[in-house]
Image (spheres, one colour):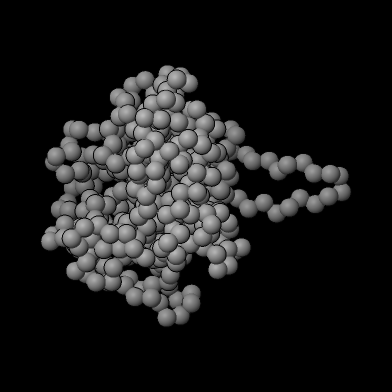
Length: 381
């Protein structure tokens, strides 16, 4: 049995009935929400709470009917650099709060302890024995009646292991892996500082490289455009910033309590009492003035078949036309064992299932993303 926080989903999530219409009328075609598995380096206490914002986004889009969140797979802290070991644990309290807040019962489990050297790619002879998280992911893919999207906002290793173990399953059942990691510059020298690379790549360079080899669509969302000298956003980097007040102040009392609990680095023990106490909305207000960097928002939207216009409106990909503030370009890409990529735009339309994130309007990008994030998170009522 997997060590899941909850073992079943809420009845309301199991059957979505169409709204009754007048006699003699015709029901409009309903598009089922895209199933999603979210893999994340979600820890308590956090080092950067952007992962908790991402988790809230996944739940909010599930509430909106855009995604069907089937499972959450957290990184194993035993794989972190030694300075972090023993200092944090997977934040199951945050998952429990959002399950309670949204009336869902999304399962959560913890990923694999990596047995090999960090630079090694995933191979059959170095797959670890402790595969609880990998098993959950494979089971979700097998059980789903439609292809599943996978968002990766931390280490790539559990998804890479699952893909290497079950390549045919990934071909048949993976709608796409959204890889939020790395740097988008085409110059290898600008993707690193000495031997240092972007954090999510650093967590397991070999697993990151292995993802690009899997037999399923890959949507690559580099966190930065370049990493040389300093991490810099740019046209091939997802990073954007906002003042937390511009989103938090619009949210419900309990949603603000969730963020207050996260940002205050509370212990995780009293998660329910804290969420239910309306006075804890004030805790979030103490962090209104802080700036927050975000990276992964576009991955959830694209997985749901949506995008963001230059004005910050969320629209379907089919209806977007030339209005999106970002796009995904088809590419040919390779990644070496050190996590350094080489890519170029694909020549023929439909000739590849690899795509890279690209900002179309740098001037409007951050403002548009902030407005869209706010409109999504108000669903956490």
